[in-house]
Length: 280
Image (tube, helix red, strand yellow):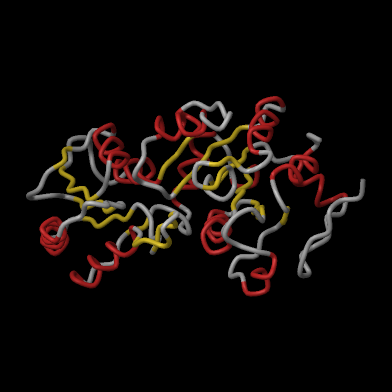
């Protein structure tokens, strides 16, 4: 079978390109748009995980979603026939907690805007959650956010607390339409304080770097599989990893000419990628 053609002038999948991709041993997979849409698995996703396990490839599922814990994502994936452990999942909340531990010791005082996923990650990392005299403010998506809590965060940031955002997503896709995402609250705090946050999630490289540390992998060994040109592919470029775009989510082939970080490979879906990797 000839290798699949690459759209819009991307380098052809010649023998050298195929060999380079097949040699990769660590895979970072975005979830929504790659593995599932909402609560529905995307065709071929369970089989792709079985293939990774069968061939001894290391992997982590990474997500900008800060509201759920790794264990909750494991439970969600299990309902789709995908069996992974919490060690296979990295959320932006977990990555934010790890990044904070590089700056502050256990027991440091943190004011958190966010839901269960963020609270569990911060407490699990040994931080004290406080409302006064915070050393850091961490902002994740909070669908019950109040003006009072925004005020607390603003005072803390103006008083010198580190300002960390789990992710910069401006909107949250739902069945009802696009709802305000964490980036909206982050923009509020930045506008009100004049302080730009340290962003952990995609399109920044930090979460990918944390995931590679977990896997013991280097950028040259690692592939980022995502559906977003402005998030997954840009994060992959900043982290220095190989970038694979699958056309099962937000980005289309027609978006490629204007992409700030063009992918190295494009596949219609995970089964097509698996076929090229040698798992057909």
